[in-house]
Image (cartoon, rainbow, N blue to C red):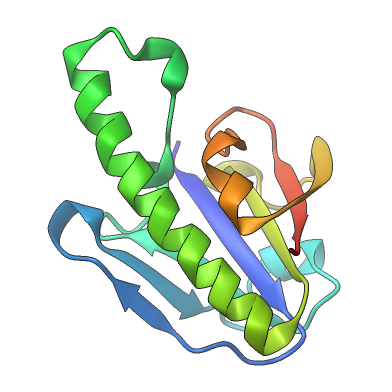
Length: 140
């Protein structure tokens, strides 16, 4: 299953395309009919994805740093998470507190298994990749 990351705001956010190649990420508007919208209290909902068309590139797993293939994947994930953190910081300036929901594509209609608050610079340690469905209020 692919990881999916969604973001919601009280005001429209600029759509973004940041980075290049395997470290390119996009923030795109979510169609009104998508079921994931029910996870949010805010009206403007966006999907965060990599060039793969999903959010699997954000899958940072420091527990497996000893394996060469994981080292490369984690390096790319850290770049993507840093870019996303910068986008979130900019979005906070535009719209105030945000909501972020991360989970696997086949379970987006289920309630989060973890709720919390996070600042953009804490994103890299948030473990968005774990099996838990995570909902965060993003603020400074």
